[in-house]
Length: 284
Image 1 (spheres, helix red, strand yellow):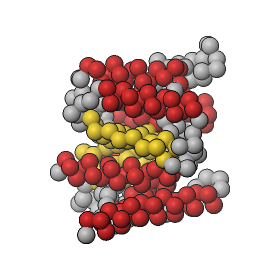
Image 2 (cartoon, one colour; image 1 turned 90 degrees about the vertical axis):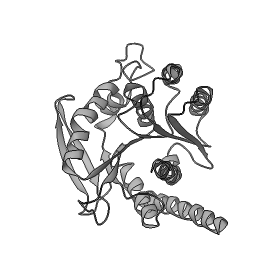
Image 3 (cartoon, one colour; image 1 turned 60 degrees about the horizontal axis):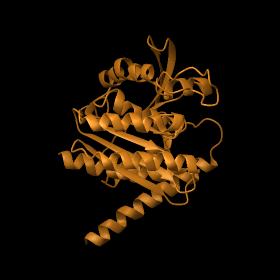
Image 4 (cartoon, helix red, strand yellow; image 1 turned 45 degrees about the vertical axis):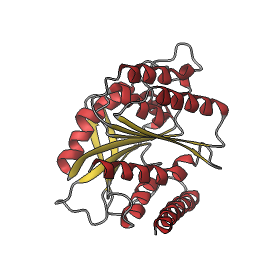
């Protein structure tokens, strides 16, 4: 029976990933959302601009229930396929129903600004490149966006952040910035290599202090067909976590076979959600 259950789980994850890839391969332009998806704007005093927010409520959302929340960077690109996977896996009983909050970026310059840590250059090809403002973006999330979501919707204490590429860099930086801000972190094809893998050094310093104040879950994935600099940065980060074991951090790394920088997140998200669900079940 256990073998049959494991086979069914693996098959469900495979089908979910394949279905999402087919859907997104056929889509063009900006994605369309159903009427149940809430699209709004929130003015940020910290960023001094309006920020779009795309809120995916679980089907049959019930105010009497408490739902985990996953904040997804690059909303309008990454939030929809993650929502679809949550709905498929939760309907089969393999993941909790979850509110997914997509955060669209504000174009190339805004994305570099928001997703780059303050100790790293936004553009590594320019010596005089301004430094990133990822700390301001996380401050916006902490003091403006998260309170808005948690006041308006029925949420549990389980809060996570997912990012792809440079977004994955910001997700890992959030561990150093404020480890208690998120209980789960998902780094898909993360750009750990930037600025001579400086984020790896920062995480090493953080882990070596053993000053973590709460339990954290971290999932990292990279496509097997991504370039060498991506792989080098990824391997370095894995080594850091292996060399600094902590009872307060549960982490997983995954090399996604036959995946590249464009589709790794779509393929590996189902695996990430399943491991996240197992982690949450272990806490109960």
